[in-house]
Every structure is written in structure tokens, then in C-alpha cells.
Image (cartoon, rainbow, N blue to C red):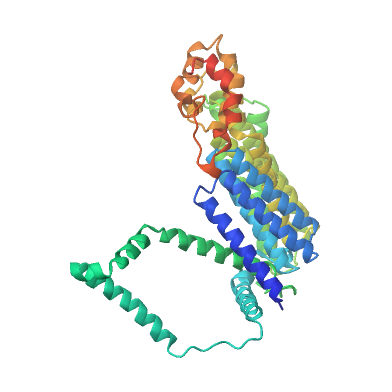
Length: 488
């Protein structure tokens, strides 16, 4: 790729600006408003590059939306698990945007091809473009050769070092070269580490920009053929065996879990129903992997139609097991309350159920393998993004308080008080429902020390990294309930 001097100067200035801006943000904290600003900056750069290269496709725009929405969630949500998955989705979306600018067929490549390409040709692209940029900045002038330049530089450095040593050893000598003491004192107070980090972020920004404007031609995908070690009969036997086991277990679920049939050996319905959702969650994941492996690792087309029916039936039974795990989880939560782990388990069940639908489309050959994994990524990212927007901590507080009357177990106020600040608006909204019939639980939940870190009027922020829950508008939104609960 050829660069003009104007292009090279523009890239250099842009890299300097982005690097300095990134350094300011990272010296605050990565999670918070600064991460949102950093993401917005790179989305804007990528959008400009896509428009300039005429690569502004619907997929590119979708990744941009995912990046920005999840960056906002990293600022708005302080719950660690929510902030983590929002951060991961943001970074993956930015990487996919940059990759789609690097090569027109980047999104059509397999995951292995994408990483291989970026780690091999991507680095060579950055180096080649950097060399081209330096060449255009230098113009047609011949480089000036300074004879003895290396010797002069080494000699000057050694002279400064020895003068400083002698000045420290002899007081009369030091008076003659007192300026060296002032020089070393100035260098000692200067933040050398800050210079190093600034240079690092400038270099990283420049490398990202050079990669984005780099390779335009499609990438030749490397074929990574997975060894198909199963015969048609093998895969048929596997699917049939697992399917029979799932069918038998489903019949048990229909009788005892959904139809409330009489249980043997004095086992209570509560004991039967309120356990096992974790094991079922793992079983559904393993069943999906079994279907995929049996269909993808079969060497021949013998009994292909029979395998298709068996695989579809197993996925359908797997969907029923997902519903069974959902019901068990609901019964457990109705007895003991909601927690973040149980909320995440619900998200997992939703993803498995939706993924099962995509898996059926792949089994009946209505979808390619690449699209199967691609759509599963979109599905998981969408579920997690929607969950972050809905505020899991607030939902957990709301469900625990509003369903308190239907539970015989006391409200786990210690757990609710240990949750992040994302739970405070829900506590303020729903806690008054406890005052009449559950006064002690209300008092414990609204205990003054629960709000010590968000006391009204307290300024607690760290520059651009301040979190939304530390902002004045957030504190103002919970002022009423804090005063009502006696928090000063």
C-alpha cells in the first residue's frame, strides 16, 4: 500500500492524539466513563476508516452498536460479573470491526484463520506500512551519514556519568560542576514511567491504525479439516443411545416434576424439585456438543437421514430438559430467593435453548457451520447485553422482596446488603413493602452502614474513571429513601 506524505503525517498526528488520550484515561481506571470515552473514540476512528474504504456494511454497524452499548453498560453497571461480560463484548466487537477493515472476507473466516492471519500477515502489514510511512516522510532526500556518530553519542553519555561520579566524590570538583547535580535532580523528579506508558500507547495506536488502513485483498483461508473418525453406524449408535437416556429422563420429569406424581420412599416434592438444575445445565451443554460431534465427525454418508432425525429428536429432548432445569431453578428460587449465580444460570439456560434452535437448523442443513457459530455469538452477546441493560442486581432485589410473602425462609438481608450499588435503586423502591409485616428485616436491610460509601454530599470520584453510581444524579435518586431510613 502506498502512502503520501500527507497521509503519513495525518497518521502520525492521529496516533499521537489517540496515544496521549489513552494514557490520560488509563492513568485513571479502565472501567467507568473513561472506558466509554475510549471505546467511542475507536468506534469513531473505525467508522471513518470504513466510510473511507467503502466497507460500511450492516455487520460492521452491528458490531459498532454492540461495542458502544456494552461500553455504556461498563459505565452504568458496577456489578463485577456484568461489567466483565460487557467489557469482553466491547473488546471483541472492536476487534471484529478492525478485522473487517483489514480484509473484506474477515468475517467469513474461521476463528483459527482470523487469529492466524492477524498474528502472521497482520504484523507484516503493520511493519510494511510503517516502513512506507517513514519513506514518505523522508521524501526523496538521501539519508545523511554522520561519521563517528555512534562514538560521539557513547562518549557524551560516559562523560556525563563520570562527571557526576567525580562531582559526588570531591566537594571542590562538585562546585565546579554544580549544574550536573541540578540536572540529575531534575531527572530524578521526572516521571520516566509515564513517558514509557505514553510511548507504548502511541505505538499501540499507530499499530492499530496501520493495520486498519492495511491489507485490502481477501485473505486466503487455511483449511483446517477436522479428522472425521466416526463411521455412520458409530454416530447413529451414539445419537440413539443418548436419545433413549434423555427420553427416559424426560418421562420422569413429566410424571414427577410437571404432573406432581407421587414420589417413592417418602421423598418430598420440595426435595425432588429444588435441586439438580446445575447438573441439568451441564447435561444440556454436553448433549448439544454430542449432536454437533456426531454430525461433524462422521466420515461417510451412511444412514445420513436416520442420523438427521435422531439428532433433531435429541435436540428437541434437550430443549425439554432445559425447561425442566428452568422449572427446578424457579422452585428453588421461590423457596430460598434469587442470587446472582442463579440469575446467570437462567441466562445460560436461555442461551442453550436459543442455541438448540440454531443447532437444529444446522442439523437439517439450513445453515452452514460458520453461520452456526456466528449466530451463536450474536445470540449470546444479545442476551448478555439485554441482561446488563435490565440490571441483574436490581432484578434480584426486586424478586427477593416482592416474593417475600410466599417464602417461609427469612429474607437474606446480608446477601442483599453485600450487592453492588446497582441494587440501591431497587432497594429504595421495594424495601418499603417490608416495613409492615417484616419490620426487623426492613431495619436490617436499610441499616445505616449499608449506605456509608454513598453518603449524601460525599464527593468520591477519580477523575474520568468515576462510576455512574458515584455521580451526583445517582446519589440524588436515592436521597429520599436514605433520609426516610434514617441515614444522615
